Image 1 (cartoon, rainbow, N blue to C red):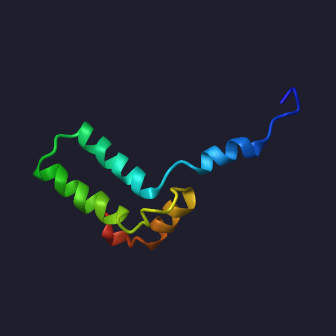
Image 2: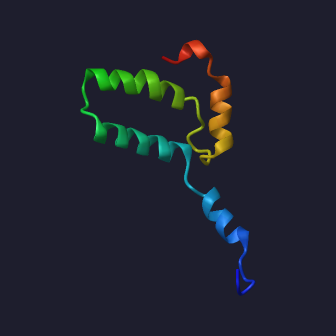
Length: 81
């Protein structure tokens, strides 16, 4: 900035290209089972509480705040918990 060469676009492009929904869902699943023993209970939790909701997302779309907000908007309150 002191050199007057700072350009927000150099940083925004990196922030916007964080990866696809499918990539991050897979990373989340890996992390979930790295932290929890894989058994009937944790598989049920993964499949009913996480996977069922995340499967509504377009896996090839870039992950963004907008994508997550749109998912939240379509989930009915009785579908969670």
